[in-house]
Length: 482
Image (cartoon, rainbow, N blue to C red; front, side, top):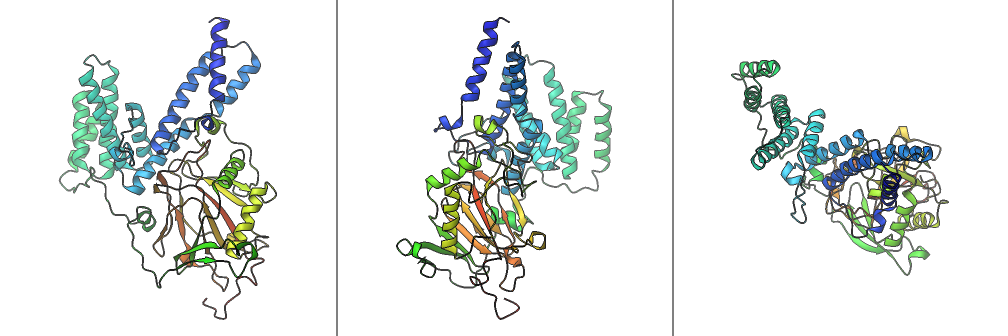
C-alpha cells in the first residue's frame, strides 16, 4: 500500500469519528432490531477500516486505533443485544415475523442468515428453546431460498444446513417436542449419513416417542404466569377501591404555584399514585440528557456519583454499550452540578410538598435493547441511611413510548404508561414507617417508540426522597396499621 492509500483510510476513519447522530436529526433508531443490526454493522465495518488504517507507520496513531477498537461493541455486547431482543419476544409474545416488522409502519426489517442464526444461538444459550427453534426455522427458510436463487451455492451451504438441522432437533427436544426433534435429526442424518452423533440422537428420540405428549412448539403460549409481564402487555385487569380524580393544585398555597398550579391526576388509590403533568419542558429534558451523556455508570455500581466516561460508540452511532443490555444505564446528577438540576429538584419539591434536602441525587436512566427492571421495592432495611429510608419515589418520563416501557405494579394490577414531561409519585412506606408491599413495581422493556435522540435513548429520571425532613410534611398516623 502506498502512503496515499494509508492517508485516504485515515481520512475516512476521521470522517466516521466526526459523524455523529446529532448531526443527523432525521435519523432515529426506534426499533431494537434496527439497533441490533447497526451494532453488528458498525463492528464489522470498523474492523475492516482498522485492518487497513493500521498500516500507518505512526506508533501514536496505532495506539489511538487500538483504543478506538476497544470502545466498539465486542461479541459480548452483541450477545447481550440479541438477548435483549429474545427478552422482548418472551415478554410481548412475539414471533420472529412480528419482531422483524415495524409495528407502526408495517415495513419489514430484513435480517440476513448470519443475524438470524446469531439470534437463534443466543436464544438457545439462554434456554429459550422455543424462540431458538423459530429463529432456526427462519434460517432454514433463508437457506432454501438461497439455494433456489443460486444453484451453484458453495459446499459451505451443506455445512450451514447441517448446523441448523442440529440446532432445530436439539431445540425441539429440549422444549419437549419429539416429533420435530425426530424429523430434523432424520434430515441431518440424510444430509450426512456418517454423522454418528446425529444417528445416536435419532435413535434416542425414537425410543422415547411412544410415551410422549409433544409441547406445541410452533405456537407461542399467549398466557403468562408472570403478572408483571401480563401488565406489560396490557392484559391484566385491576380493580380500584374508589373513584379517581384530577385537579389543579397549589399544594397548600405554595407561592410558586399560585399563578401556575400543577396538574395532578390520581393514577391509583391504594397505594396512592399521582401523576403530575407538564412539569418539565423539552428544553430541560434535552439539558438533562446532555449532562448525563458523558457520565454513565451501570447499576452494578449504583452509588457512583461521577463515573468514568463510557465508550465513545454512543457518540458515533447512537448506541449504548454497557455490561448488560438488559439493565438500564444510570447517571447521577447532584443539584450543584448544573442549575437545571437544582431547578428541577426545586420544582419536584414544590409540586409534591416534600423536602429535598436529604433526597438522593437525580438519576437519569437509559434503557438498552430489551432493558428492564424486574419487580422490586425501592426501599428496605438494605437501603437505610442516616437520612432514613426512601419514603417516596418520583419518576420523570423524558420520552413518550408507543409500545412497552410501562411502569407496572403487579400486586395491585396497575400499569403506568410513559408520558413525556410528566412525573409520577408514590410513597414506598406506610405512615407507620413500614414497607408498603403494594408498591412492588417493575419497568417493562421498550419495544417501539423510544426516541434515539442525538446520542442516547433516555427514558426516565428518578428522584428518591428520604424520611429525614418529612416529619411535618407527612405525619405519622395514629393507627399502627396505617
